[in-house]
Length: 483
Image (cartoon, rainbow, N blue to C red; front, side, top):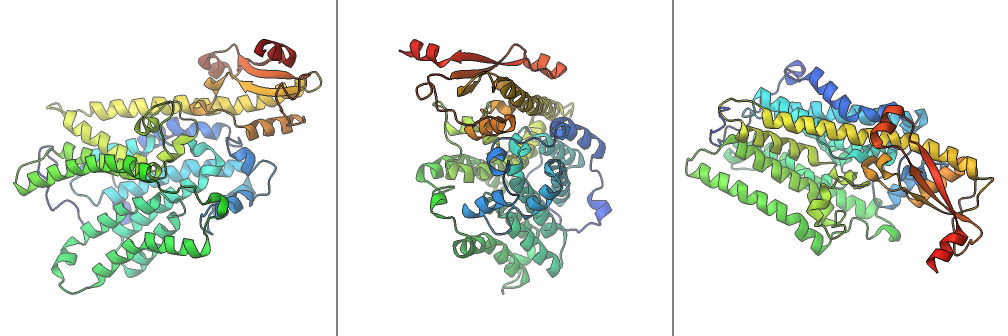
């Protein structure tokens, strides 16, 4: 099939040619990709030893294996956290650096995977790679406790890469093992449909021509069985304990929320199939957009299914996915970059026009990098902020009895996440003061401390001085006002 935007969908959509390593990476945009990726995600490397969010309860003051033990209790597999433990022996910074590297390496695997599709031109392949790298999602990756999700992401694309780029039985077995290991992040159990369909497509002629069951049929069957095998083994060897039984549990309402985007995408796919059957050309951009929409819907389906994405403040769950003030919910966007990248490049093909300019894709890439730089700088400021809070708490411990703590400087927090109680406990422990904060009613002789700042986000970023201070109000005044 040609690369003409108006060309029709053709059976010759992919090639099964196995390329040598140097040919696989031929055309990969190394310089541009590294620059755009580092502008987007390099902020975490500036302060790589920072603890965020659940890190304060899972790692601060805890033995190294504590987080892994909790994860296994929640029903995650026995190989969960092993790499994380090894890296923590080196230091927190090692996980930060590994996270930065592995997401870039994942893009390399994707580039090689998509090269098996002859219909995708080299320029579009580069655009998909760019958007995949800088899609402004999953900023929660900065936290240590998210690392196992990130490593599962790498394993998934590595397994997919080995599956479709190598033909030997040994390579197939290796790919299945790697994909199975990636199931430690349970949303991948659904996303494995993509390498399954890709492998089946590459072997479609053998699957259809052979009347008897052969090696290709067995291979496809094995891939299909992998998720079921994982669930079966989980029920026997690493089931969740009682306190975690309802975590990630599917619900009927979540099922409907997750199905609607998939059904909408399937309607688009049916339109393409109908036009192909009638020998009518379908714009390549529309085909790519529909496929990208379906992949994005599949990426979000497990999170909708378990109602990990729900509507907040009366907003629909679909809107919540793209909210700017996402707190730490962006971790549920782990699998979205591929679908978003295909959709953006598809729309770019539709909007190209006669000038054949990649204006739309370029605009999306620039906006994505800008958003990543903004949110990345927020996490940088949050790291500085946490250190300053400890200093302020040390300064007040001999003067003030703390009844409660508050924060009115969320503009310095990544994705405007709000500090949890255990984060405040960590700050207070580092400051050498008691973590008890019973409130004014229980401690009328105490005071409420509210963190404030006289600096804007931009001034704080440029000066690295956040202008933080505690506004101290005696509980007697608070109680008198309430009464």
